[in-house]
Image (tube, rainbow, N blue to C red; front, top):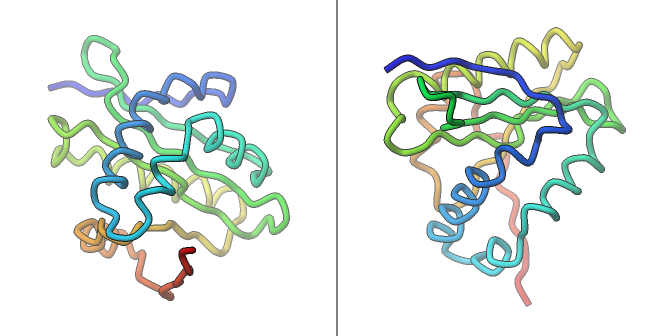
Length: 152
């Protein structure tokens, strides 16, 4: 299958909403303790948080041969610390996984974050989704700390 990576403007961010919703559902299904967090999270809330925290945002999409978006990666630079970059969200449709697309998206994000001068590059993996840790280790992302949050 032929794939194309295409960068989109933040004004086109809503193009990835259906895939983000699938990712959110995946996290809902995997989360042992914070299912309500994912249940209550909407695309509009997530997008607003991303825009609010970010100085600059880069969005790469993966397109199939019919130009359908089957994956994406969102990266950002923190507006309060320009040396801090984050890979905020990555998703590839299940049928297209294991084709090297995620690795290509992450490598593009790392290049962009490095070109923008970030010296701290991070990503967050939700508890329950630990199966992705080996993938991220290959790209030199390692666990730094485990943050615990109280539930009322």
